[in-house]
Amino acid sequence: MSVSFTAIYEKGEKYYIGYCPEVPGANGQGETIEECRESLKEAIKLILQDRLEEAVRGIPDDAIRETLVVE
Image (cartoon, rainbow, N blue to C red; front, top):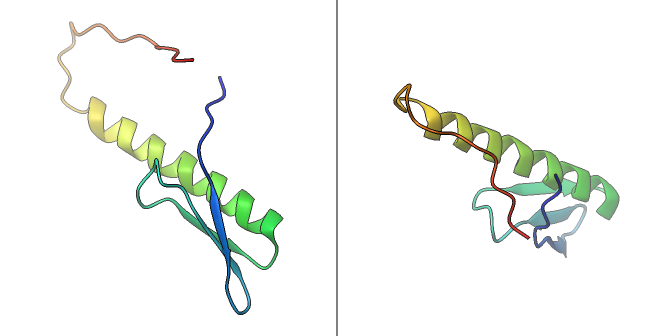
């Protein structure tokens, strides 16, 4: 499954800084825009995985869990 996010990149003095408005706290950086993009992708993955793990703690055993695809 692939999901699309908005990435915004700004050029600093030495590094590109990237962030994703849909995922607060997701930031990346790199000397090139490509490095920044990969750093931002990894940050988004880590944040979403952490939020999922936190959200499912304490869910009752009889709760129904499924994958929901939004297009």
